[in-house]
Image (tube, rainbow, N blue to C red):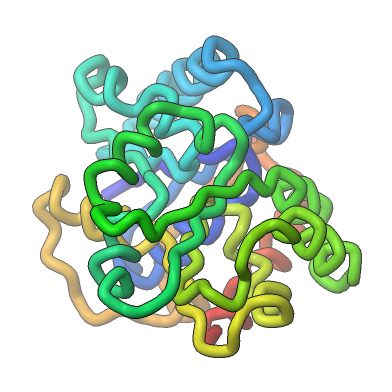
Length: 264
């Protein structure tokens, strides 16, 4: 089985990381559109053009399914692409429903962070309207985190200062759950702990996305394995070009960062 996973950049590696655990024997193609990152600040027309090119790239490599590991790309175009191509296409959306179901009954609020395109889009607002019966959900755009992630900046107080500034008008002590509505945001859990209440819960769509992939493929899940032990093959591409040895070292550093954050 061969699965294609793509994102605007390296954020989707968090989805690949989960997929490697759940489907250790599969082959993967990971496509980071580094030439056009970040998608969250592009127009819908531009994003659709990127998606179309990437999906055709994946199909030429005979993938059995494609995961759009990008909330922004999913919010723009996933629905229309599902009927356009001959393989299952699985998108992502901010895990608002999951957060409300798990924590909406508790006192406090839920904060959903995403890119500007996702926050402004009808898809997310319709989702919130459907599930947020008690008006507990707030939305915030955090595009700067995408830039920090792409630079590999994980050890700088600039991130803390950025978060404090962008969230200064939000009642941080009231939040019980924080929805990571962009795959790039998964790298910064250690920084969220500095500004949110100690017992806040982090929710992302990675697990649900991979479960949907398994359902679409009719795959019976086996026990999850560690990423370091998987026997699958991975081909990495940056905007359609195979990565260099140096770029693969960079990717491995991101995967190690994700492994370290697993317990948070």
